Image (cartoon, rainbow, N blue to C red; front, side, top):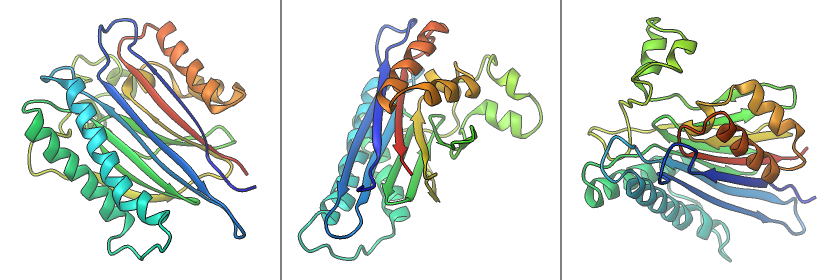
Amino acid sequence: MPPQLVVGIGESVGKQRDHNEDTLFVLNATLAGTSEGIPFGIFLVADGMGGHQFGEVASGIAARTMAGYLVQKLYYPFFSPKPEPQAESFQEIMRNAVLEAQQAVIKQVPGGGTTLTAVFVLGEQATLAHVGDSRAYLIYPDGRMQAITRDHSLVKRLIELGQITEKEAYVHPQRNVLYRAVGQGEPFEPDVSTFPLPHPGYLMLCTDGLWGVLPELEIYRIINNAPNPSMACHELVEAANAAGGPDNISVILAYYPN
């Protein structure tokens, strides 16, 4: 006691890139007192698109814009002396935060693009906003890894149409082509959803430099055997680099104990 999220992060440029186009943001807090503690967290990953101008700048602007919006709308009101009821739902706030990031990237980095995957946690409830092919997973004690994001990629669409298999997607020449990304195209709409956190269990956010290199069984094995989320993230990054490190690697791992 009190209930709290235990968080680790890891990041690497990888073995085959000369600069980092990923951006991470983590805000983890707990409000505890005479009543039961309430975990609070904002977690975000953004992967600048290397095929577009200033991918690293786009990911940084998108991450800072969205994080700043969520801090203003969620963090400050929650921890103010006299919290007031929100006029907007958490889903509306998350959606509007992505739209703010979209406008910021279009204005400041014309031609730039980035993925953007963010989760807001309050207690045992999490709200997701997602664009692109970075991913969020729920990881359960029995070994299940449930992707709670859907890749906005050409190969994912081809899989859904039955034209290629999951195995073929990993080596497809257009596997990095996205049909939806922050800074790219209008009209624009993020995926937004709310779900319960596994308790105990993990929430993981990562870029394709991790999930596109390591199989889920290996990811789970590393997390399950690590003494804490920080070491798990370090070992995940090391394993992705050992497997060739073809892209930037970023991962956030939040553990919610029983």
